[in-house]
Image 1 (spheres, each protein chain N blue to C red):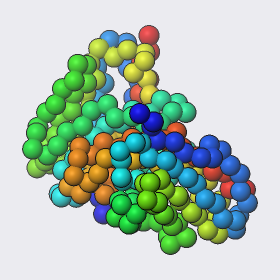
Image 2 (cartoon, each protein chain N blue to C red):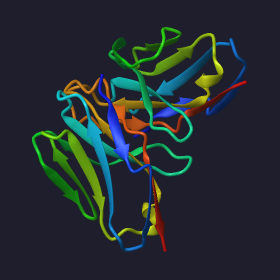
Image 3 (tube, helix red, strand yellow):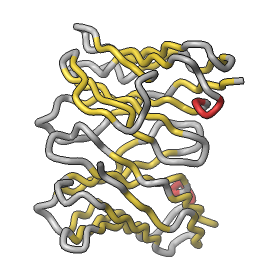
Length: 114
Length: 112
């Protein structure tokens, strides 16, 4: 069974640029959630995708957007990058809304905005 | 939305002692309360969880208690070992599990 994989693992961008982060969910999982984890903080919920539709969203501005594909992999897009967007971005998959609730996290993509 | 507060932010104990981490939540609709352990540079991993129809759950050296009336839940680790050293996060979510919110984390250090 393949776990959650994310790419890239590290990247550096400058203010104002755009970034796309990718996530492959664990086999059999149809739900993907994205979190932002600043240094020394807990993961902050960005949004969740279930069967290709956004299924919940945290307090993040519209320049944070996402997609989920038919194979349940997902992308997180951030436009007009700001310095405060520097963080570890975690993707987590789960089997579906009606099951145990456990989130299976990837290793994350560490974004640095200069 | 849900707001989860976690205390303490850091905790240092001697090997063999017990450690207790406490969390409160704000949304009475929350009914699922997991605890995640994150070692340095690693992904968060679930260590134990509890649902709102249960007051306590135990798995070997770790246990979680839930007080729905007071909206707080706690993680208890007994007979701590150096490998328990990590950051621990509590979280809460609703029945749809589409909005899991995390606490700020507790850095636990177990001194040999």
